[in-house]
Amino acid sequence: MKYEITKKFKFEAGHRVWKQNLMAGKGAKLMGN
Image (cartoon, rainbow, N blue to C red):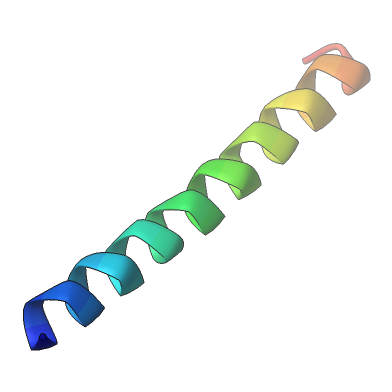
């Protein structure tokens, strides 16, 4: 059970980072960097 919670937490944290990177990438493209 604890393993499942850890797995879910890691997945959600990873997804959040991925979204931030995606937004940062879009911002950089819009800025023309």
